[in-house]
Length: 204
Image (cartoon, rainbow, N blue to C red; front, side, top):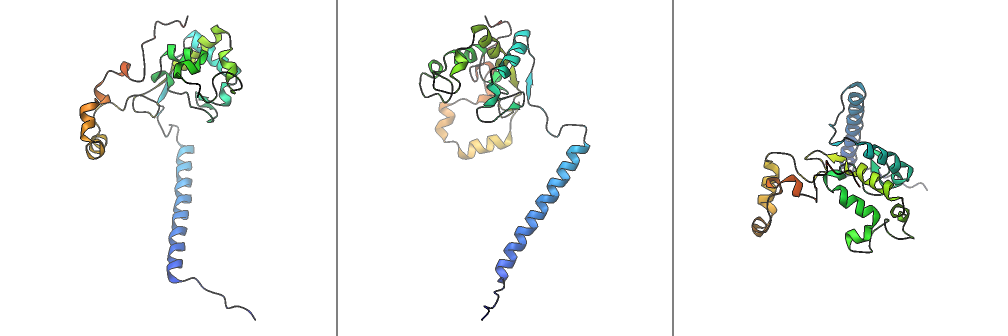
């Protein structure tokens, strides 16, 4: 005896219909986006990470790849996402901090709980054993990977006021925060994220 085929209920039909509409719209939107991207001679998103390498920084870029750092990190939009992306790091950390971290990572964090950098058997233990001149060049390379204000890797938000940020702070931030903390947008950029001017630093 064959069981009677059960049809979808009205509510189920509506839900499947709504889901189908969303799928169709998503496919159409993706196709349109790709068509615009491929036909445009301008990038869809402006570059927020910049670099201007000195001779030592350019050498560090080569050593960075030769030392297999790209197997974990991204820099100049190359590499993997297994570790932190280093694009924009120069706007967050000074050359001295980066060099000291590469040489003695646990000392910089005052902890042995670093993920891959540190003594063996940590995967990136070999980095600290690189010749000192190579570490300095790599540190210089990373320190020259800058980020524009407002990008995700920059220590400072976009210039000017933001009604959205102001409204969110007013709505959600406890009143005592305004007394305890200062607005980062009113502070000197060089005081944010341990950023220090190093234009004259030759890394030696």
